[in-house]
Image (cartoon, rainbow, N blue to C red; front, side, top):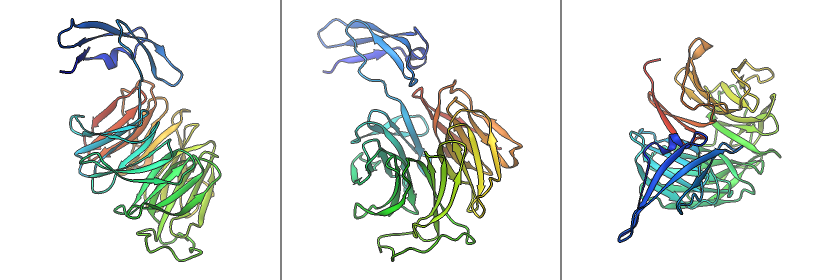
Length: 362
């Protein structure tokens, strides 16, 4: 019979405070129960608490959640962390259903395919993986990037997927053949985030230099947005691989999204939110600036969008900026990622917590 470990129920709250202490115990069959404690010795520069343990207990590693997503039906969530694993959980109560193991080091991004039964992930090990959320098996591994993968996008129903990397490239992959179909863009600078959309028919996406592979499914008429570390936001025709526009911002672009086939939004390291019209990107439609903290995530929501920043702020802005809702509780810890399903908003934060917010009618 295995040993049983018990820990104070509110340990995750207590150990975020300097000198906070939580009890734990270990009971092994035939042996006296061992009682000890965990104590927070402070918080490191990376925001991770430094925890010491007593009575022979050892804290081997403290992980943080980097990314989350919610399935199309709203029933399942997936989260990725710095220990190389992902968890699939019930969105309603957080109950863990599956543990996905196979990456080495940080898993930077994860998302469900439209079916809600398959997960796409990218890690610092430069690998892109596809998983079954039903049995936790890894069914495909893509290799080809020379740096950590920072973001992904799924083309239509998912026969093709896209990844962006620290190596400066965005690549298109064939899921059925487990092969790279081509480099969509080679930027010479890390591509921190990407977004995909059907382009407005007035936008010139260019023509491919050679006939696309028959394995490319659903790439025609789409524009890929690239948020680059070198302060540039770039639009590229997905099928043509031709540049559509290049916009220079105030700092590194961390994330980007489309609000429609015409309007896009991108966030920078110095806290600027740029709204652009893809038909004319010479000057932004508007610049929104709420704080100087890095913009970490952007997501279209109803008639507006949700943004999260490195100072713990997460907010919903409705059309024309006349309605702002702040999502609280993160307490100055960066909010890395936001996911939504209907009126529910989920966030993941540096403190290791996934929070769910229930919104009323906006």
